[in-house]
Length: 358
Image (cartoon, rainbow, N blue to C red; front, side, top):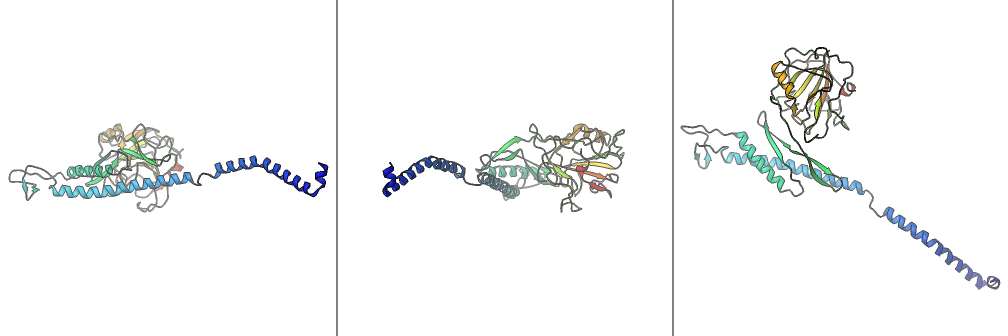
């Protein structure tokens, strides 16, 4: 060994041999690092974001298809109804079209029913022909002023796990026994012994929603003052029904009916509720789909209905100028309710509802 180390060739051989042993010692470590890196960087970056993007795009396509289907279905239904003379009465035909009267009878058409029947049929055909759209039922009704309103009988949700659209929970829309607008003739007393401080003792939706859809004071060109006069909040369906709405404090319901704009089913819908809490403090709940029957009975018989904090007064809805089920909740102070649903208050001010909620 000493002789080998002393010679030049021996030194070279020993160096090469030492290098081989060193490389062999490092090889397992290098392979381990390689496998770790492969596991770490083998997947494409942004995979979760890509799933979300594709899900969003698919949802947008479905909503666009629904919108276009509704437009074409309405046009086709009007054409179908007019071609059929809007009725199939017993007054005879002329040149293939139904007559609306004869010498002995009148057969004036039921425009609403004719268009409704054709519209539902056409719309279902459009939806049924779209492979990416789930099998979801729709129901349609006619509002005041011959306005066609359609609403899904089920909600649409996007399943991010696989990027598919699925239907969830059937919506049951209960209707009050009497949907006519009523207001208090006594002007409201705040519910007799009711005393309200600077904060309400309950919340309009319980549990409180995870987020506010639209905050108070943000720009809203569709409102007369140009700003959003309340907050928009919503809860998901509960047992297949729209969630209940609660009175935020004791008081007297002085009005149930349409609010603002030109008709019962525009603006805030036909079932908006105003509660007088005394001292010219009012809470307003709009776009409701339902009002409790006892409240409607009180409004019909007495013109008002006294409520307590946390009492159920109705259900969340999508009536009026609305793009989805929610509650438009407002607080108005400073002046007395006018009793006029077109201009409920002359003067006074809207306040940020969050400042009043506990």
